[in-house]
Image 1 (cartoon, rainbow, N blue to C red):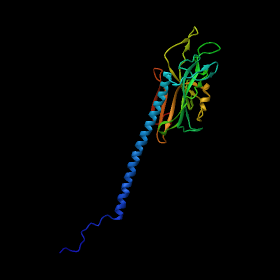
Image 2 (image 1 turned 90 degrees about the vertical axis):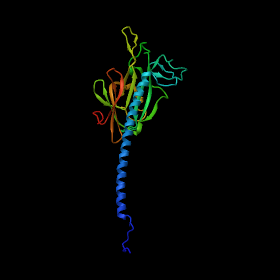
Image 3 (image 1 turned 30 degrees about the vertical axis):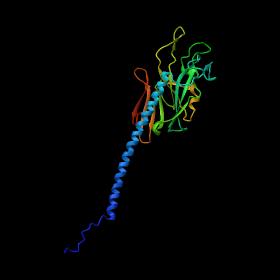
Image 4 (image 1 turned 90 degrees about the horizontal axis):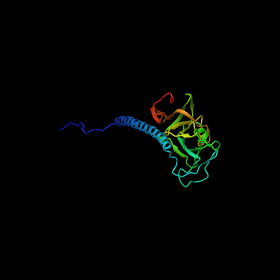
Amino acid sequence: MLGGKNTKPLGYTIVEIMVVLAVSGVMFLIAATFINGKQAKAAFTAGVNETSSELQDLIEQVNDGRYSDIPQTCQYNGSISFPGSATKQGENSTCVFLGKVLHFTGGANPPYNNYEVASIAGGRINPSTGQPITDVGSASPTIIPDLTIDKQVPQQLDVSQVTVTDTDNSVFSTLALGFMQSQGSISSSGNLRSGAQTISLYALKGSPGNKGSALSTLGDLRPVSSADICLGDGTRKADIGVGTDNSSQLNVNITIGTTTQCP
Protein backbone atom coordinates (compact mmCIF):
# COMPACT_ATOMS: atom_id res chain seq x y z
CA MET A 1 0.00 0.00 0.00
CA LEU A 2 1.29 3.45 -0.97
CA GLY A 3 1.99 6.04 1.65
CA GLY A 4 -0.25 9.04 2.30
CA LYS A 5 1.75 11.48 0.15
CA ASN A 6 -0.51 13.49 -2.24
CA THR A 7 0.78 13.24 -5.84
CA LYS A 8 -1.86 15.53 -7.47
CA PRO A 9 -0.53 18.83 -8.93
CA LEU A 10 -1.34 21.78 -6.76
CA GLY A 11 -1.51 24.38 -9.64
CA TYR A 12 -0.07 27.90 -9.65
CA THR A 13 0.02 30.16 -6.69
CA ILE A 14 -1.42 33.69 -6.84
CA VAL A 15 2.10 35.13 -6.71
CA GLU A 16 3.18 33.09 -9.73
CA ILE A 17 0.11 34.19 -11.70
CA MET A 18 0.77 37.83 -10.87
CA VAL A 19 4.38 37.53 -12.00
CA VAL A 20 3.29 36.02 -15.33
CA LEU A 21 0.69 38.73 -15.85
CA ALA A 22 3.21 41.45 -15.01
CA VAL A 23 5.79 40.09 -17.46
CA SER A 24 3.11 39.70 -20.15
CA GLY A 25 1.94 43.28 -19.56
CA VAL A 26 5.46 44.64 -19.94
CA MET A 27 5.98 42.65 -23.14
CA PHE A 28 2.65 43.90 -24.53
CA LEU A 29 3.54 47.50 -23.65
CA ILE A 30 6.91 47.21 -25.39
CA ALA A 31 5.29 45.67 -28.48
CA ALA A 32 2.52 48.29 -28.59
CA THR A 33 5.03 51.13 -28.21
CA PHE A 34 7.15 49.70 -31.02
CA ILE A 35 4.14 49.28 -33.32
CA ASN A 36 2.79 52.75 -32.54
CA GLY A 37 6.22 54.24 -33.16
CA LYS A 38 6.46 52.52 -36.53
CA GLN A 39 2.95 53.67 -37.45
CA ALA A 40 3.69 57.27 -36.40
CA LYS A 41 6.91 57.28 -38.41
CA ALA A 42 5.11 55.88 -41.46
CA ALA A 43 2.33 58.49 -41.11
CA PHE A 44 4.91 61.28 -40.80
CA THR A 45 6.81 60.14 -43.90
CA ALA A 46 3.55 59.79 -45.84
CA GLY A 47 2.44 63.30 -44.78
CA VAL A 48 5.74 64.88 -45.81
CA ASN A 49 5.71 63.10 -49.18
CA GLU A 50 2.08 64.05 -49.79
CA THR A 51 2.75 67.70 -48.95
CA SER A 52 5.72 67.72 -51.32
CA SER A 53 3.62 66.15 -54.07
CA GLU A 54 0.86 68.73 -53.63
CA LEU A 55 3.37 71.58 -53.91
CA GLN A 56 4.83 70.04 -57.07
CA ASP A 57 1.33 69.60 -58.45
CA LEU A 58 0.59 73.30 -57.86
CA ILE A 59 3.71 74.19 -59.84
CA GLU A 60 2.59 71.89 -62.67
CA GLN A 61 -0.91 73.42 -62.66
CA VAL A 62 0.56 76.89 -63.08
CA ASN A 63 2.95 75.65 -65.75
CA ASP A 64 0.03 74.13 -67.67
CA GLY A 65 -2.18 77.20 -67.15
CA ARG A 66 -4.78 75.16 -65.24
CA TYR A 67 -6.77 77.48 -63.00
CA SER A 68 -10.40 76.41 -63.46
CA ASP A 69 -12.80 74.36 -65.54
CA ILE A 70 -15.29 77.23 -65.20
CA PRO A 71 -14.98 79.98 -67.86
CA GLN A 72 -14.33 83.36 -66.23
CA THR A 73 -14.82 86.84 -67.66
CA CYS A 74 -11.98 89.12 -66.60
CA GLN A 75 -11.41 92.77 -67.51
CA TYR A 76 -8.44 95.04 -66.81
CA ASN A 77 -8.44 98.82 -67.04
CA GLY A 78 -5.83 99.69 -64.44
CA SER A 79 -7.56 97.31 -62.02
CA ILE A 80 -9.03 93.81 -62.35
CA SER A 81 -12.77 93.14 -62.42
CA PHE A 82 -14.86 90.03 -63.03
CA PRO A 83 -18.19 91.15 -64.51
CA GLY A 84 -19.67 87.68 -65.06
CA SER A 85 -19.30 84.19 -66.50
CA ALA A 86 -17.69 83.76 -69.88
CA THR A 87 -19.11 81.60 -72.63
CA LYS A 88 -15.76 79.89 -73.21
CA GLN A 89 -12.21 79.74 -71.90
CA GLY A 90 -9.50 82.02 -73.26
CA GLU A 91 -11.64 84.98 -74.38
CA ASN A 92 -10.15 87.53 -71.94
CA SER A 93 -8.01 89.81 -74.11
CA THR A 94 -7.03 92.20 -71.32
CA CYS A 95 -6.40 89.67 -68.53
CA VAL A 96 -4.08 86.74 -68.03
CA PHE A 97 -3.82 83.88 -65.53
CA LEU A 98 -0.77 84.74 -63.41
CA GLY A 99 -0.51 81.73 -61.13
CA LYS A 100 -1.51 80.49 -57.68
CA VAL A 101 -0.83 81.55 -54.10
CA LEU A 102 -0.62 79.06 -51.22
CA HIS A 103 -1.26 80.49 -47.75
CA PHE A 104 -0.83 78.46 -44.54
CA THR A 105 -3.54 79.28 -41.97
CA GLY A 106 -4.65 78.37 -38.47
CA GLY A 107 -4.56 81.57 -36.43
CA ALA A 108 -2.18 84.32 -35.43
CA ASN A 109 0.54 82.00 -34.09
CA PRO A 110 2.16 78.72 -35.16
CA PRO A 111 1.77 75.85 -35.67
CA TYR A 112 -0.40 75.91 -38.79
CA ASN A 113 -2.17 72.81 -40.11
CA ASN A 114 -4.46 74.27 -42.78
CA TYR A 115 -3.88 76.17 -45.98
CA GLU A 116 -5.76 77.89 -48.78
CA VAL A 117 -4.88 77.98 -52.47
CA ALA A 118 -6.08 80.90 -54.60
CA SER A 119 -5.91 81.31 -58.39
CA ILE A 120 -4.64 84.74 -59.45
CA ALA A 121 -5.39 86.86 -62.52
CA GLY A 122 -3.63 90.02 -63.67
CA GLY A 123 -3.58 92.64 -66.40
CA ARG A 124 -2.17 91.74 -69.79
CA ILE A 125 -1.87 95.21 -71.40
CA ASN A 126 -1.16 98.55 -69.75
CA PRO A 127 -4.18 100.70 -70.70
CA SER A 128 -2.14 103.92 -70.50
CA THR A 129 0.72 102.87 -72.78
CA GLY A 130 -0.77 99.96 -74.70
CA GLN A 131 2.37 97.96 -73.84
CA PRO A 132 2.36 94.38 -72.48
CA ILE A 133 2.79 94.06 -68.70
CA THR A 134 5.76 91.85 -67.84
CA ASP A 135 5.96 92.40 -64.08
CA VAL A 136 3.61 90.54 -61.72
CA GLY A 137 3.49 93.41 -59.25
CA SER A 138 2.41 95.84 -61.98
CA ALA A 139 -0.34 93.54 -63.23
CA SER A 140 -2.66 94.23 -60.25
CA PRO A 141 -2.72 90.57 -59.12
CA THR A 142 -6.24 89.69 -57.99
CA ILE A 143 -7.94 86.53 -56.71
CA ILE A 144 -10.26 84.91 -59.24
CA PRO A 145 -13.66 84.64 -57.47
CA ASP A 146 -14.95 81.31 -56.13
CA LEU A 147 -11.76 79.41 -56.98
CA THR A 148 -10.02 79.48 -53.58
CA ILE A 149 -9.66 75.98 -52.12
CA ASP A 150 -9.33 75.21 -48.39
CA LYS A 151 -7.23 72.17 -47.46
CA GLN A 152 -5.51 70.51 -44.50
CA VAL A 153 -1.84 69.65 -44.20
CA PRO A 154 -1.71 65.85 -44.77
CA GLN A 155 -1.58 63.40 -41.85
CA GLN A 156 -2.36 66.20 -39.36
CA LEU A 157 1.21 67.49 -39.56
CA ASP A 158 2.00 71.01 -38.40
CA VAL A 159 3.83 73.77 -40.24
CA SER A 160 5.99 75.52 -37.64
CA GLN A 161 7.47 78.15 -39.95
CA VAL A 162 8.21 79.08 -43.55
CA THR A 163 11.48 80.88 -44.23
CA VAL A 164 12.31 82.54 -47.53
CA THR A 165 15.63 83.54 -49.06
CA ASP A 166 15.17 86.80 -50.94
CA THR A 167 16.92 87.64 -54.20
CA ASP A 168 19.52 89.63 -52.21
CA ASN A 169 20.18 86.55 -49.99
CA SER A 170 18.40 88.07 -46.97
CA VAL A 171 16.02 85.76 -45.09
CA PHE A 172 12.50 86.52 -43.87
CA SER A 173 9.44 84.63 -42.62
CA THR A 174 6.20 84.21 -44.51
CA LEU A 175 3.10 82.04 -44.68
CA ALA A 176 2.18 82.83 -48.29
CA LEU A 177 4.05 81.50 -51.33
CA GLY A 178 3.18 82.28 -54.93
CA PHE A 179 3.91 80.25 -58.06
CA MET A 180 3.75 82.69 -60.97
CA GLN A 181 4.10 82.38 -64.74
CA SER A 182 6.70 84.45 -66.50
CA GLN A 183 5.04 87.24 -68.46
CA GLY A 184 7.80 87.54 -71.07
CA SER A 185 9.89 90.61 -71.84
CA ILE A 186 9.73 93.63 -74.10
CA SER A 187 12.00 93.77 -77.16
CA SER A 188 13.79 96.95 -78.30
CA SER A 189 10.98 97.50 -80.79
CA GLY A 190 8.40 97.52 -77.99
CA ASN A 191 6.89 94.11 -78.77
CA LEU A 192 6.38 91.25 -76.32
CA ARG A 193 9.25 88.80 -76.66
CA SER A 194 7.98 85.22 -76.43
CA GLY A 195 9.96 82.33 -75.02
CA ALA A 196 9.81 79.16 -72.98
CA GLN A 197 7.34 79.34 -70.10
CA THR A 198 9.03 79.46 -66.69
CA ILE A 199 7.49 79.43 -63.23
CA SER A 200 8.97 81.70 -60.56
CA LEU A 201 8.65 81.62 -56.78
CA TYR A 202 7.09 84.62 -55.01
CA ALA A 203 6.33 85.38 -51.37
CA LEU A 204 4.52 87.84 -49.13
CA LYS A 205 6.76 89.17 -46.37
CA GLY A 206 5.40 88.72 -42.84
CA SER A 207 1.98 87.46 -43.91
CA PRO A 208 -0.33 86.56 -40.97
CA GLY A 209 -1.88 83.13 -40.57
CA ASN A 210 -5.52 84.17 -40.38
CA LYS A 211 -7.61 82.83 -43.24
CA GLY A 212 -7.87 85.21 -46.17
CA SER A 213 -5.61 87.83 -44.60
CA ALA A 214 -2.57 87.35 -46.81
CA LEU A 215 -4.65 87.17 -49.97
CA SER A 216 -5.79 90.77 -49.54
CA THR A 217 -2.26 92.12 -50.01
CA LEU A 218 -1.25 90.43 -53.26
CA GLY A 219 0.31 93.66 -54.52
CA ASP A 220 3.16 92.98 -52.06
CA LEU A 221 4.12 89.71 -53.77
CA ARG A 222 7.84 89.73 -54.46
CA PRO A 223 10.08 87.31 -56.37
CA VAL A 224 12.33 85.23 -54.09
CA SER A 225 15.09 82.68 -54.60
CA SER A 226 13.89 79.80 -52.41
CA ALA A 227 11.64 78.80 -49.53
CA ASP A 228 11.80 76.22 -46.75
CA ILE A 229 8.62 74.81 -45.21
CA CYS A 230 9.18 73.26 -41.77
CA LEU A 231 6.89 70.32 -40.99
CA GLY A 232 6.60 68.30 -37.79
CA ASP A 233 4.48 65.90 -35.76
CA GLY A 234 5.77 66.82 -32.30
CA THR A 235 8.59 64.27 -32.51
CA ARG A 236 9.96 64.38 -36.06
CA LYS A 237 10.88 67.24 -38.36
CA ALA A 238 11.26 67.72 -42.09
CA ASP A 239 12.30 70.54 -44.39
CA ILE A 240 10.51 70.87 -47.73
CA GLY A 241 12.62 73.14 -49.91
CA VAL A 242 11.25 74.96 -52.96
CA GLY A 243 13.66 76.51 -55.45
CA THR A 244 15.18 76.32 -58.90
CA ASP A 245 17.57 73.63 -60.10
CA ASN A 246 20.44 73.88 -62.59
CA SER A 247 17.96 74.07 -65.47
CA SER A 248 16.17 77.03 -63.81
CA GLN A 249 13.08 74.89 -63.28
CA LEU A 250 11.18 75.30 -60.02
CA ASN A 251 11.11 72.06 -58.03
CA VAL A 252 10.54 70.62 -54.54
CA ASN A 253 13.01 68.69 -52.34
CA ILE A 254 12.64 66.92 -48.97
CA THR A 255 15.12 66.72 -46.10
CA ILE A 256 14.09 64.58 -43.13
CA GLY A 257 15.41 65.82 -39.77
CA THR A 258 16.62 69.18 -38.53
CA THR A 259 18.28 71.63 -40.92
CA THR A 260 19.63 75.17 -40.70
CA GLN A 261 16.27 76.50 -41.88
CA CYS A 262 14.25 74.08 -39.72
CA PRO A 263 16.10 73.65 -36.39
